[in-house]
Length: 304
DNA sequence: CTTCTTGTTACTGA
DNA sequence: ATCAGTAACAAGAA
Image (cartoon, rainbow, N blue to C red; front, side):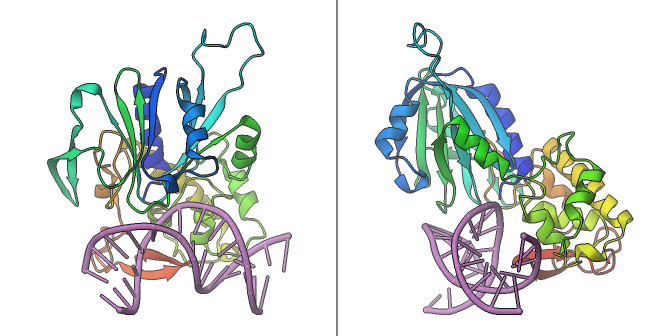
């Protein structure tokens, strides 16, 4: 499940790989992955353009593209950039291969093993393929077809961006701001952390980990939290997401980076998917319940 | 066969 | 208005 650290890892890697590359061909193998425009229009808008920037808001990737300079830009009104938005939802992947890889990539096998296997692309989960002029390819794979791609103009992008809360790794995240957003809210801390309008980019894994690091049960209502507890949530949100980005995210089952490799944060998980196992801090048993409609993991001893 | 899973939105009822 | 709860979406695992 790609959350902020996983999406940020993909963003950083792809920035090095595809910026400045001109799109030669777009293949839509499954129309369900496209939102809005028709397949023909989608292709037409992209082909011949190059990606000039990759941005991220929460879990949403924002690829800025435009025609390369000297390709119909001169002599007329400056051509406005457009934006390709990609949301990976639960099982979306962006896999990049150079022309030399012969449609095969060496990837980590999955589960908890570091074994390498060959992944042949495209496969049955490949929904969209971008081919660049240098013959390298970017595959959008999505097992469950919840993820989507769509093209928007700048105005629409601003509207979409406005719906997101503060970026947790930006300087915009301050204790004062968090206290402000929490004020007068009565929801539980897990639902608060999951709500993208409050803080952008936290999903089920990191919400549970932030609660554990803060010693707070996910079911606790915001109006029952002391200022000190709120401060711990603020500190740990930043700390955990930063560390997870450093470790290139968490591969729980499906997540892969753009090279097909797993994230390393799974070694650092204290509660997520550890139900029935011993708490690394107190030796008690980690419990799994349901909070905010999601599977929720916590230590009954360490979290109050 | 049924149940469960995740991110997000839409909807209902309080 | 605000919040909690749940269905829906797709497809696979158990």
